[in-house]
Image 1 (cartoon, rainbow, N blue to C red):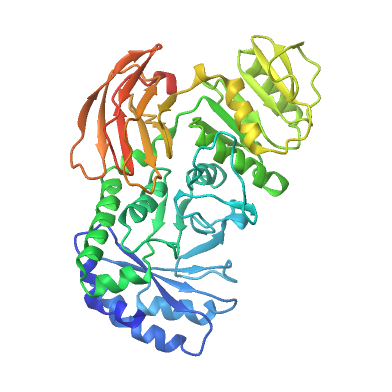
Image 2 (image 1 turned 90 degrees about the vertical axis):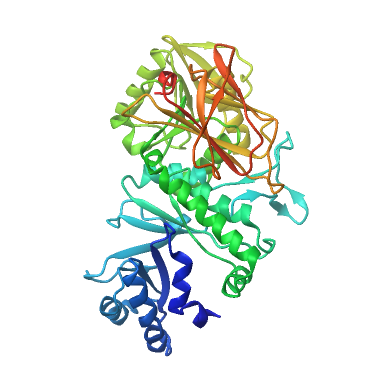
Length: 466
């Protein structure tokens, strides 16, 4: 089937779509590499004539010495390697890396990331049938959003491709899941490397009507985000900053706190520990330092100045704090809470063990009154707020990970002071105007039934977000 998929006639599937780059298996250090490359030459030539670029996948150490020059001659635009090349090459290199080993400070401007989650709902287990779940029983959502927010902070200026293969359990011709894979990456400023399961590939080659409709819906989803590329330069709206090194012993715990804050619809921005002094804390209500190590003297002074101005500072137990006055609180069993100037400092009394508890504590100490958004009857949704730094435009994007395909009776509460919004759905060429109603010094919008995704765009009234 792979040989048939490389027939130049298959390129007709891309006509009129925004898909303009294909990844092909180029070399793996095997005896049949040359035959594979030779069979690809007509396919690459026909694709380049249609304006399509090709990236060659090169696997194995030392294979690039012969594979990259051959790829340059064949017309490849770049190669994707699993290890940094041993020397510079004329052909650009895309480095492929698992999540756990991303070279954030490398000179590679484009990283292709593996070990990602297929978006949707699911339940993981600890041992056998003992399930890991929060006490609320809220359905678990698998999303890559929090990781991408982290990636854009740790790898500033880089482009990220997300590699996610469809699971074997995916129902045949399940279009919502494919479209969700696109949206889960695009909302957070990345791109999914489109990967089709074998049944779908076979159906498309046979021009099966269900497979064709699925492909058309997938392409329409990609086209929607292509038409809204300007949203990609928006910045995260946040009431909370989460600070960590996000590496080593702090990597897993800090990442899971981010994941669980997203599940609570807390809007946060991420500040890498080494960048704290050059980062703005303006407009934030709280900062959570989730590293095991305490900050240096300069960073500490900056953070306490933030608290004295009225902010909440949540610190790990390594901090020794004598400033201010100890006060009682509902969290006294887990935190020592001190008033400092106009604000508060909460220092954990014991080493953090449970990220679920920590994320919940941070949100409760931050207080619901500092929520930027709330979703009522949220079910299996995640929500991401962002704003245009060059205009008074704000954006709320809601993703539904439910396998049922439709979400209804959801209400959005937001601190945006604009009582009207433009509502976008994936299948609409134009937005519709949606009116809201005043509620608790904010605005509520009763959302229409939707499938997979919708966005509310505000043209003013987002000053609380900046």
